[in-house]
Length: 247
Length: 232
Image 1 (tube, chains in turn red, brown):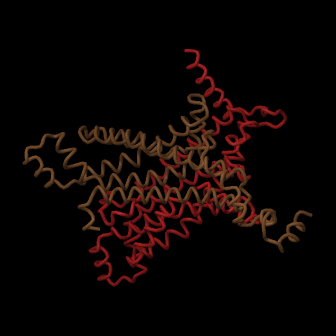
Image 2: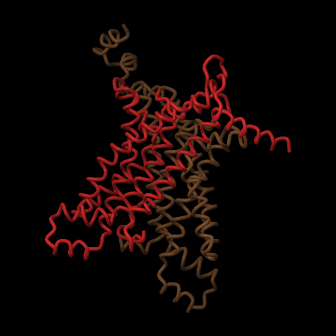
Image 3: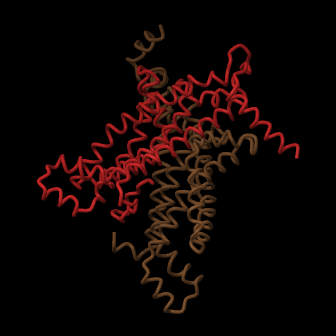
């Protein structure tokens, strides 16, 4: 019984850390409460920049490959290789090999690379699964290739594209947590600097990061539902078994 | 001053100078490879145990949901939340319950694999052609016989695809397990994150492990589903 209360107490202390700033374990600096806001800001900044870069690169390539239908091999390779590279290894690689680049950009670019495969694969599959009749009808109406991509294939592929963006965003938020290990102070700072923030800080920051990820997931799922054209359900035809899309 | 020192050393790239120059040093790697052996095996252990346990749980859940369809929604939602929670956060949310160490890391990694494995087993079972089921029933198979002799064998390609995704993902996440006090290659990686040789060896071993395990499962799949070979 007392042990049960003890761990409830730890979570209580963690919530106290989230909402009220306190003196750090080592004394001196204030931690927790409003002191978390700059960390949250950096976390969001890194995430937003990485996602912006990833979408700018992956979306056009995915749409182009899907439109021409030629890049199945490339799309599969990117998604398989992307999964095999551990996120920490990628961040470490950038930090070790580009020591002159500011850590902030090393982390951002590494996160962007991590975010590319799900978006690219989903955009590719999303376009490939558009019914050929719809594309033929558009062509019959005299639409150019660009118009077909923009007005037919892109809208019909949007649900899957947003599925990819959602997965990547949650992944990037999660991975940005380890950025403090290379000196970029995100919400992972209280977690990795346990001697300064204490266990309450480690658990408290974990609660905040988890809440952030769940909120991003739920928010983007709502966007995904909103952009799904009426009459389209997220039923995926088994286009290519080796291409695993994300929800 | 340090900058100048580094420039002076750049002329001679052998032995210890290569290390001071932060290069990729075959000699250093050969001399220090020992330090990666036990983190590597810890990594293998964390991955195998987590995917093994995750598969046992997800497989049982899928069989349950296969019979009782209403369970599919709730199970997908709960495992979906586990999948969304960042592993690093879970390591520390478990701190008051399981402390630091292998148990904490494995619980977090298992939780992460559940959605992937559950969804793939379900997809495999759902994609079994109705004709195959009917034929089995016509031969007088009971529901249990139908499951083990017809449905599960036909679901194997999807199940194995799920295992491949789960294994490669878990190798990547196990690189964070050192934060939970469970060792693995991530610890070796961050011991000297600015040193290129170290990052290449530790990161390379993790990537290599993911690729090798992936290929092993693929080979296993080819071996136990000979009837799919003609199709692919």
